[in-house]
Image 1 (cartoon, rainbow, N blue to C red):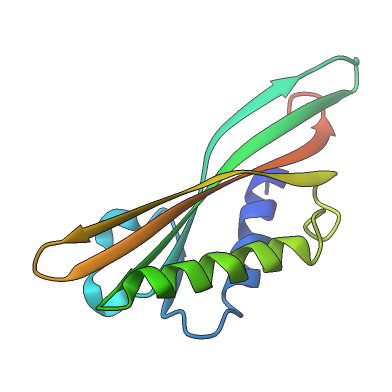
Image 2 (cartoon, helix red, strand yellow):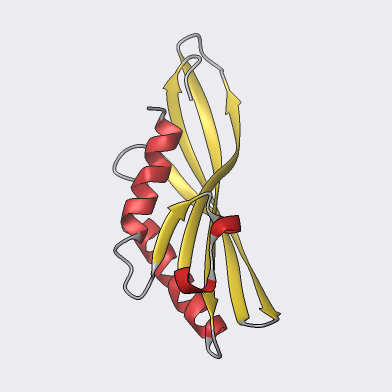
Length: 136
């Protein structure tokens, strides 16, 4: 299993411990229904790599963490979950030694009102890690 996949799996495991969250998944945004909320969805969306040595590659994986909630207090719920997501990452920014460090790229929030009031936030975190040459 790639280091990148191990990082994502470790984050999912951490987020599963957040109280009040119904669903924690990877890449499931389109398949979630209101009954699945509040939810956290983790996606390793993008990465860059730099091979400055003959034996190692430096990677930066951009990880998107989507937080969704519904109801009259949906944005308050999203804010609380985002705070807990960041605290879980901050407990060990090396994700159990899988990466050298993580950085916060930002948090973007949104509120939609259709049949249900759905609030969401997208948290962008970069995980910096190294692998053997030609591995990710």
